[in-house]
Length: 601
Image 1 (tube, one colour):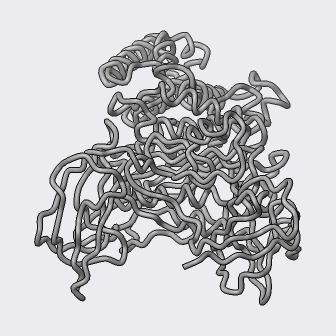
Image 2: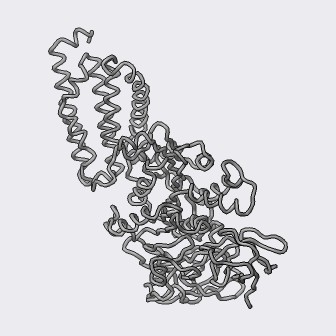
């Protein structure tokens, strides 16, 4: 079949109006101009259509040809994804650099997967096996951390009539033949090609009752994320959105990480590209990049590709979810993605809504976040997978009332609010525990009680109550000074200080404190709440807070955060025993001084 050719009529930045292709379809990929730039149809009229071009359109002229491809914007899925670095439409950046140097030439058509590289395929089925869509027919040890599971593609079911033996094969070589109920034989290869605009099929959603442990104490304690959940981290410039998302990507206990830099500064993506290959996964000890896919679409790249990049990332994440993996998808930032929507919408002449964003901003955001979730994957057996989506939002001037932030908050169930004042005081992560929230507390409570302790919900609520009371007292302290407060309220201020300085602050660059196992987080909070309770009891007995602050145990509490991961339990036991001894001595001292009798004990 010969390709149809139309012509360019008008050009407005990345938006090109064309004519001459009467059978063109929405979201079909076209090749635009003499340089064959990659574009996608976003509007179709009776005699013309509009395409958004994923590359720089300078130099294009009316009457240049437009060629239809007949395909939707799709990604190639299979062995070779992990450890890769792509642009917004799944072109490998290292390959692009080899072809055109540091500055990417236009019109380059590069495959997402290497078609020549051979992979070790290990069959998991035999001739005669009945298979359905999504069933695993073999495995490929792709990296030292993740094994790629080769699945029967969607729409195919039947009987295996041929399966290759264990050996080396490319992603486009036939590894299996399946005969369907009509007697037709279909070849199965390791690579699947999937459109990005529509989510991959699954059986059903299931309850999200397991937390995604991030290793960041403020998050895991006060606003936990569930595997398969959705979260947003809004904050003004310099509050630490990108650093926090980097921490997520490095330490979250997801098996696969897909990180998309959507319109962010090039130096931030450079930092990730330079640092991550040298980082080790805390569970396997292998390089972190072996379980990571990076999509770099920086702010100086064409805005149309920025709009497509999060759909590419979501489709790649769904592919690993369908294999039965827990996937963490980080989008930094959805505000830059929304700006791309606004620019393209304006060039299309669509009626603007609030602050110039298109009226469909909220629905597009919802479509993206709805691709998260914990599901039963498509297969004849029982297989669970999840995608946890965490998106950064960059409200201008830190104004959380702007449209992108508000539309996001109506969708997500976890909200990590970055505070500019905390960031200015070098408090990291600069997440305000009192203005942030998680709607997963109730569904995760059973897991926390079973894996940490029955007292976990209680000590978390107690810590939040202390922080809330501290905020109220701070206003009084600013007026009259701390000396005017009674001892009981000064004890609350001291307990809040311990929670904030000894527990919530966490160094992203310290080799130990950068990651806190959930067990260590629980023990640290239990120590601090235990100290707070004993301090309150001592104050009721008449002990001055300044006397309590002389206890040597405070030095041990301050150093808890740098306790090694493999020995925290014994050290926390020692701290709790020492705290018990010192307070017993203090109570004995009070008793001997006659304070107990004076207070009616």
